[in-house]
Image (cartoon, rainbow, N blue to C red; front, side, top):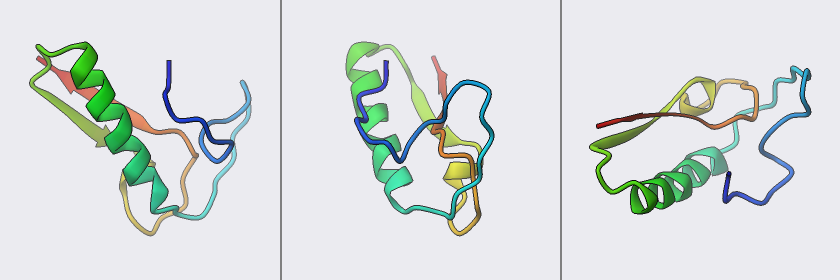
Length: 69
C-alpha cells in the first residue's frame, strides 16, 4: 500500500488522465523507495520508471517502480 497520502497521485479505476509534470513525483518516489527498502531489505535496487520519471513531460499521475534483488 502506498504511503503517499495525496490526491495528486493515482487515478480512479478505469480512468486515464494526463497531468503536467510535477516535481513532487520524484520526491514521492523517494519516500516509497525508502519505505520499500526498509520493508524488504534484500532488495538491491528500486528504480523510478514510467512517464512520471521523465522531467517535463505530461504523465498519468501514477508512480511506477521496478524492484530487483
